[in-house]
Length: 555
Image (tube, rainbow, N blue to C red; front, side, top):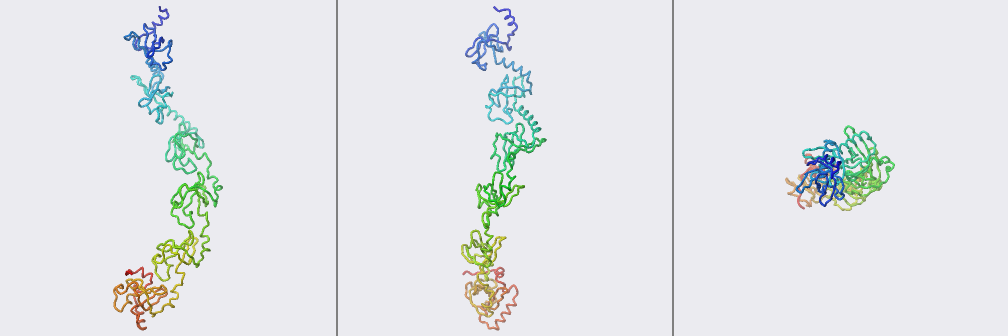
């Protein structure tokens, strides 16, 4: 029998499908819960609609939505979830229009994003989770966040959320505040956001700043990844602020003292220092003396005597070495170093060690078109020019008289300390035969020798004292000779008469046909030679070889 109070309460309730009513749990079964809503029959709610079924107990009061007043078994069909959704939906529409904010809990991962419980289920697209798209969505499940409502569809009863817009809004507010408060010289905490070839972008909790690679270390680094990694936290110094363009320049090395401040004291000129080769370039080697301090050993400062084409011929990157400080430019942050200064300069004593006109011995180390290099000592060469190989012979290449490895004696002609050259001579070992040519040969003398070379204008005959005489083509025979090679051969023994001696031009004229001439005939022949045109004259031997087209017979 209902009391009057219960009858009045019961009459106030509306029992119709779609209505939300309160009920009392009267029985908990494995798959369902019986609820008394004050109607003539109990209602049934699936136990799966309770978030924590294990704590549901008899006597609990719950809000439920009436789906059916009577099923085929006469029971009222109820839904706790739909009651909650209807209540929350109305609440959300009331307090949170599009653009409003609401707190919610991430429930699960769904296609394209996350499912969020804000009283009703709402969708959070992956692109709206954070400023940087997350790689691991599972890390968000179970966490509570603030969200912005970006779209409500009442017909479909769905809601789209954004967390990213709130983060961006917050960052914009922080950025504006940072730009107002921040001053050059400030030290700020930041997080490495991104690395590039030229530097790193640092997130200053709302504002990105650029840490250029040149401001990371006083020392040499090739790429920012050598010092930093994405996500790393660090303290940086504010170097410059452009508030209009919202750009901030940051520094890391500025937190430490500049190693160049007392550079002259640490590395005085002429001091010996130790370092490591950090870079090799065509013109020299960079040597790190300490982090942030490098010196350059120019290629010319590697050796006193050896001509080194490039530093990599004698040095390796990473090599430890010792050097001497040659000069310092603190403003340009440059230190000049030398390696050869570690040893005595052999050119300082070259003049006293190898005085002019002294005799020296050594091996021929190299031959060039203009002369031969003779090694006097380790790293010190003298050069014998082709013109100093013989008093009498025209030598076109030193290989005509010398070969590599020959041990020879020579005379010191000059020591040029400034240009680091020592000139040597072979011919100076003996007297110049042309100085006493009148003692050896006179006009009219009968001489013998072998043909050494043939030219279009005549033949050269090797005489004593390493002197060549020239038989002009007109002096070979009484008969006309068209081609010298038709009547003379190289190495052929001939007898000839000396018909001309020109000491100033260093030449001797010979005549084979005059070998049996009388003195009167010789005078006539000599007069004829003097009357020859310049082009037909007995030109100096060195010019004759250059001007004539030589025709050689095989020996």
